[in-house]
Structures are given as structure tokens and as C-alpha cells.
Amino acid sequence: MKLYLSLMSGFLAILMWFVFNVPMPLNLISQSSDFSFGIVYSTKQAESLGLDPLITYENILNELQPERLRIIAYWDRIEKQNGIYDFDEIDFLMNKAQEKNIKTTLIIGKKVPRWPECHIPYWLIKADSKNLEKELNEYLALVVSRYKNYPNLEFWQIENEPFYNFGNCSNNLLSVKELQNEIKLVKNLDSNHPIIITSSGEMETWLRSFIYGDKVGISLYRRFYLSTPVFETSLIYPLNPYFYQNKAKFFENIFKKEVLLTEVQLEPWFDKSLKDVPIEKQFKEFDFEKFKESIVFAKKTNIDKIYLWGVEWWYYLYLNGYPEFLNYVKENITNY
Image (cartoon, rainbow, N blue to C red; front, side):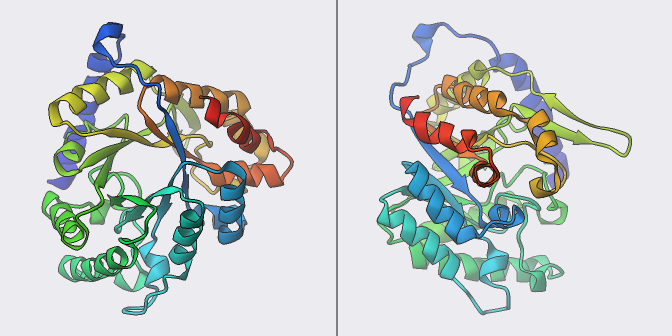
């Protein structure tokens, strides 16, 4: 049933390409002049590139001085053993953001960003669904109670694209009831911070995110990677900025809830770690010109809050003789 609903959502999402991917009269679309840019940071992605995740994080904050930030609480890093919790890493991330007064979204749950998408502790992988849910709720309660009073905490994000069947998560897709229970748990512990529910910007309708979230986060991927035993290629979605703008305004007007661009693709996509791909091949897939074009494209969606994805890669390039990506963001982001 979950897989069927996911397939139906994908089919309807593609139909929406034709409905919303057209210019609308300017007088029907309010124009924003108050853009706010942020970044998404993953300790796992930094490590996969051979970087120290905490030193890299601190250096990035010092270099970019972002207004907003999304950071990821990885359950399998926090509770490596049953009932033994290590919050040192998230404490460090949250405290550094607080020192710089950066508005922070903390992403929690079992399905959170970066491959394999589901980040369940090893000792729980073979657990039955009831036991997994019980352990998850205990973990979520501890996380929310620990960080809810941070003055820089802006939003909670519960799960990541919870209804999108992507990643090594086929057996762990959330049901509506499970997501509702997680939302209820978080709201009971902290009624002061809105909850973001995210959707794939291209391959979901966004409808369920609007129903269950206080705010809706969407991804923006202009290119996607396709790998088969015979060939590999990169394809471009046939969408323009009008699509995201029109669809966001349509649902915002119905539900009276804000849309955020929570994941703007600014790194190449392969089926292996970027560290294992020659830089020349990385640039063939996603070079500096595509990087700049993607930032401009995101702004043209006219969605106010925009979070850039791939900062670990920019910093990796910076250390390896290609500083233009990080420097471009540093020098130009406030001008957009």
C-alpha cells in the first residue's frame, strides 16, 4: 500500500509539471524582495570526503556567515548502543550556531538527509516495526527535550521526504499514522517551534506535506543521475522556475502555510562517494557555470527562504585547489 501511494504521488507529480510549468501573469504572483539564504550541513557527508566534520563545520560558518542553517541529527551516530546516547556532536553543532545567532532547523527522525537516507542504529535494523517505533519515540523525546530551549532553534524538521520512496528505505517508509504520532510527540514536548515536513520538489505532489506540516520544505534538483548496468547518464528536469513558484503559491493560498526551498542541488550526483570520483568527472557533471546558474534559478522561483545543498563539497574543492565555489557563495550570496 505504501509503495502504491508513492507511485501514485509520483504519477500525479509529473502531471503537475504540465499544469504549473508555465508563466503566470505577473499581477497574480507577489514578488519577493526579502530573500534569506541558508546552508545544509551533514557531518556524514563531510566525513565521506575525508574531512574532519566538526572543524569543517566551524570553518564553514566562519567563512560564509549564513543567516540560516539546517543540521542533521543522525540517530545511528547518537545511539550506537541501545540506551547509550552521545550528544556531543549535535551539542557542538548547535552551540556553534547559537554563538553566531544562526537560525537553525534541526532534522530528526529515522529517514534524514544523505545516503542511505534511513539512518537507523545497526542494533535496530532487524527489529520489528513496533519495537523500532518504540525506540524511535524514546530517542525523539530525548532530542527534542535537549534542544527545544536553544534560542537559535527556528524549526524542527521531522523525517526527510517521509513519503518519497528514495534511498535504502523500502522497508522503513513511514505510514501516515507513524508520521502523525511523531508530530504529536514533538508538539507535546515543544509547542513553540513550527514543524517542517519535506517533499521532493519534482517527484511528489507536496499535498501530504501541506496536510501534516506547519511549513513545507521542497528540494530543487535541476539534474538527476541515472545508472544502469549498461550505461550511466545525467538528465535534466524539463522544469523552469515558474513551476516551483506557481505550485508553491497555489498550495500556499489553499493551506495558508509557507513553502521553503530546503535543498537546492549545488553538487554533482553520482552513485558513489564524490571522493571516489575524479574531480574532472565531477566538473563534467556539475561545473562552476552550472553552480552559478543553479543559484540564480533558485532565486527566480521567488521562494523567500532558500537553503543551499553541497557546502561540504565546496569546502572539499576549496582545500584541493578549487576555491571558486566557496568564494562565490561567500562574496555574492548577500547580493541576490
